[in-house]
Length: 209
DNA sequence: CTCTTGATCTTCT
DNA sequence: GAAGATCAAGAGC
Image 1: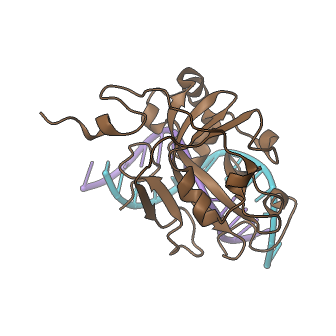
Image 2 (image 1 turned 135 degrees about the vertical axis):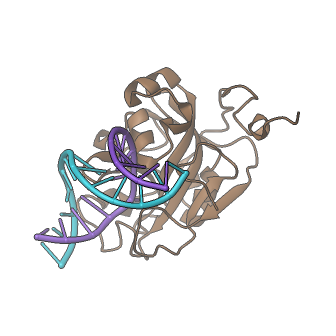
């Protein structure tokens, strides 16, 4: 019998998830680049909040210049953080119910950010299962609202630096194959292929085609 | 498996 | 007053 495909994927063994290997902590400089460089480079990185989280397997890029971005119409109280310096967290309320987190990129005034859409859970599984009321690790963080809930992210983290506690974001330690596709759940600028994922991952919110 | 719908709040028109 | 960077549950296939 050939080995299951998952056996050779980063962060997984044949039978279970293994703790992520952590690369160097990401600095503000990492985020101070084009959102189209940062977004794919975040695939395979590990994101923890108070020690709980996992490997980033899916993100989407947003930029002030396109109408799907919250920053498209200029700064508002909600989107103020996006217009600030890179390396900070932009947290917003989605559909009145969920929280979602973005990493602000580029430079002050660019209002560009990467929405974190899915994690492969690796650290603090018990805490995440408790917060989500769910056992299945595959769906624990397979969506922007789900992972915010699992990591206990709320507007309390809006505007905080990504390079200091409670955040710990570490570079990847392998070279992933990147899948790309159109962004999900939007109607404007829906054709832009600004969704990036870890090719073949079972932990994404929706499969890449 | 896919499709539909309700929940609930912020922002902008 | 309507739309929205979502999710979970229920119905139907």
